[in-house]
Length: 109
Image 1 (cartoon, rainbow, N blue to C red):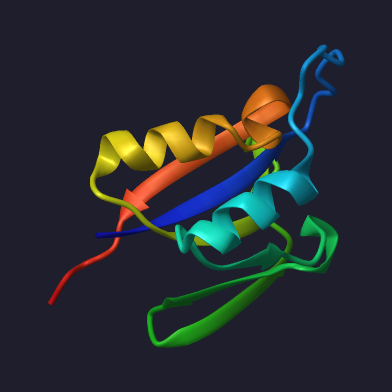
Image 2: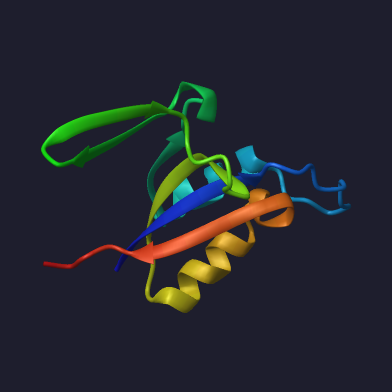
């Protein structure tokens, strides 16, 4: 079963914690095991564009909504047994310690 793992950072800095896993080690471990299918960082929020169509008119604005608390920093596609396994993998990612990880199951059809 595949999951999209959205890696987000808080706009407000989080105090450093001891024991935070190394991201390169996390990537190497899950690439080697086949759990991590693909993943990468994304461009900063300031480079983002938001696209909407309203009344048949295209509206393009810069960046994400200002009222969001988290900003998308990257993504990974995971191949896991189930959601519990995906949660276990996500909890080991360094951004789970100082940011936010969102998991969503990808359609199987």
